[in-house]
Length: 396
Image: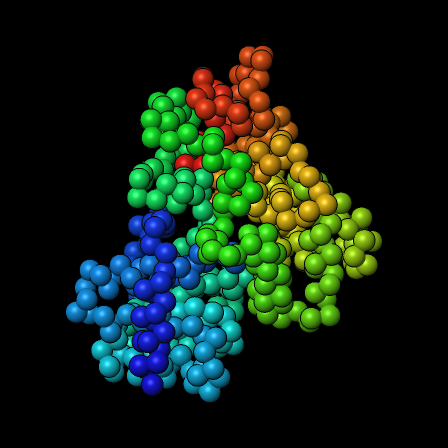
């Protein structure tokens, strides 16, 4: 039975794109026995698993049968459990399972727990939707799973992808960028000019879509719809009849973001209650389609100060709207910072970062003196508190 799974595994790892190394791979402690890689749809979770398997096979070809990638879309799992599969895998010498689409198993949490305690020589790494409850009730694995978050490509990763083997640009911490941005920019510019990649990245660089004969806009549209139709509806067990309202809400947001949140107006437009609108907003946030900017100390269900799309590629998803350069620049900065830094709204600046750094965003270099840290979209090298916007794309 396992041979058909090994055959699929071998084909997939031999065809995975190995040209870009994701930084998250270095941050994961691969010795942990239960690992979840969480990310929005389309950011490359499956590829990360396959790259890891490919690397391990090249390093340890004699242990080829010890690692196996398994997709739970396989109809085998309609009548067989993960526990049964793991039992046979371990009996034949298997040591690590890489699991995809596990959320389609209604008992995934219980089965992972059972495997963890019964097969002590087995490691399991699985990809997860942000809508899956891994660390909160009714999760049965909260105390044993190690969770890692995968984001889409950073500008740095995108440039590395475009340059191929010619270059391997490194990342920098937020504090390093604030303190040494001029030196860092000069070092990066000695290898590449990031501004020449920035606009294309903002349109189509966040998602790892590289296949030939694949239209980016169409693929992005499919990704967005899968987030709604599968991730939200299936994980939140929402009736299909309500899908139209969630889609309409997303359309309303695409027309306005970045913006404040007028819950009453949205409730009228999609013909539902204010409470339901806030629930749907939470679903879209958890699915990593939008981001909510709150004041420090205020979180959902309190109304956010502003709503942003999760990344700049989504800003171009609505062909009837041309988003301003300012809106795109703000979204880029928020996306780049989100995940590694704490970001809040501020009354005097565009963003408050880590509760101490106030930062504004400019599309062109200000002609007046600036006394607050500011990200500037048209700068190659900054000066004093003016920092090139592109440099924040090197945070990961």
